[in-house]
Amino acid sequence: MSDNIQSYQGSCHCGQVTFTATLDLATAVRCNCSICRRKGTPMIATESFQLTSGEDSLSRYQFNTKAAKHYFCNNCGIYTHHNPRSNPALTRVNAGCLEGVDPLTLECGLVDGASFTVVDL
Image (cartoon, rainbow, N blue to C red; front, top):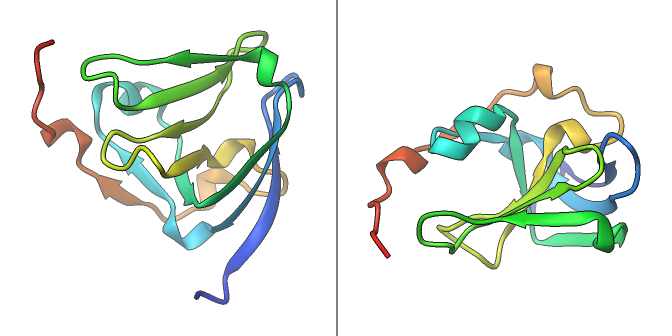
């Protein structure tokens, strides 16, 4: 286990959706799939994600295979987290939603989501 793992509080812009997540900022990634290119935010994986308020304010967006689940606040529109298609049991949080974290300063890896095979349903 990494020494850099910490617990963070997170929220959308309006504060209706809040969560806690235990994660390592050094594992931040960007993805080049069609939706993540447009979101443009670093994402950080956590296996310890807990929604603390605002479940009724969350909307879910799914496309293509519908395996990935992208969540955003239906009041302010901020994307807070998602479960990726590559591992639906995993949660990745929007680094910009974490208290005390400047996502513009994070070194990020790349997830090549654009190369995933597109499946017609």
